[in-house]
Image 1 (cartoon, rainbow, N blue to C red):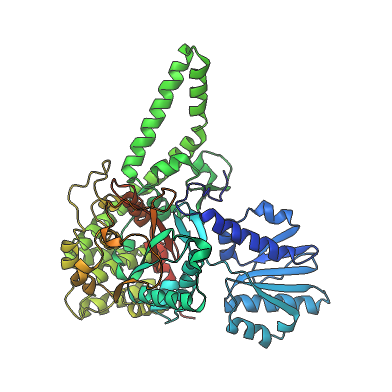
Image 2 (cartoon, rainbow, N blue to C red):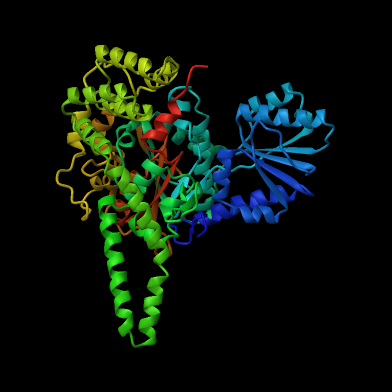
Length: 592
């Protein structure tokens, strides 16, 4: 099965976005005549693999390499670098060119920055005296469709950049990507934003429309009715909790990267010593599409039920008389590889979910979210440090403690900081400083308002039936993500009725209609409205997470979109897909 997702059923024509990027890349490469070696920055190669097949690149007569400090080994006379604007990459490229010069190897060099070049990068090429030997261009890849309803801007460090380094260049990138969507699907007339970064993106987007306007005559009636922008900083509780959907748990334990997960072949029932297998995970896999958003306990039951049905069908095949009955049976057999794949994956996941350490962690998360027995949680975290459990696990619970409690009391803060540095090494002082600067692990200065937020927005749902999804809380077995409650409110009645709660959460908020732009009917009467574009399809709400979104939150949004009476389809865009561990890791740095 192809790793590139099938986008035929997407509510928006995301395939046209992908095709445009693919065509641009192919044209850039075709413009360079002769045999060439394409050297891709490793992180970027994952993004590129979602817009173009490796086989297509090889058909263009390319050799493929990953960028590293090591010189490029190739006979090609042309070397094309496809890289993000990172200073360290410029050093690598300069050393490659200098290495060739020292060996009297003559080549033509091309550097394509993704999505755009930076003055700082070009300055390094100048300082290294190689800039005049390089042709510098840009490949404006601002977004990658991950699936039918998910777009990634591929900005994994945006949260740290904004909160710690004060670097807000990623916000321009987000606004540019949204503006690119507007050129394809029309200007979005209504905007709701919560958080400093989101309000800033809304402002940049307005400026872009003034400076480079989308002509409504070119694109017809807008397909996207409303833009909802949300800072990750507004809700740091949700990503610190363990996701309990099927896709969420796969990401927690096996880490999904670019729509696929890599596991030992033995996990998938293939006995090949030390061999890894890449398992694609997107909606092209019908069984995955059916199960990805379910609570994991339900997925196990669904797989068991399907396996039993297939077994019964197999038993009955002996008495099958007609050709059409045989045909139906063969059709069911076609789904066997998908069945086997997910039974193997689910079985592997249970080896993690049945561990006492995971169950204890869930208990602690629940206790913190419910804002009860902080003392017990503090003792538990202390014990984790003494046992030297993975630092990301410890920091994840500490951040959850700090965010729900508006910080740690000074005495506890100083004590836990000292214990962490003694146990894991003084080099982690930078990580702790980063988390403190970001406001994620700090001293308590005032009383927490988490109880008020939790109670008003009904974030704790007692007795959640995991098999019958009555509320978004099923994705965390009883905790309804704060982020999704805010979006739910924005969709159904707007944010004005909840001004008081919004003021308790980080950052400013805005709710505005962009003047002079044509629009669909009012978003304030959204729920149950008969709303759609000309051909009878539903209008669309674009939900953008700045700083990352979890798979469980995406599942909760899909649940909202599927509810009876919902008048809109939802497209989710994010700077990056994250979980608690990957988000914490972006803040982790060592001294030296």
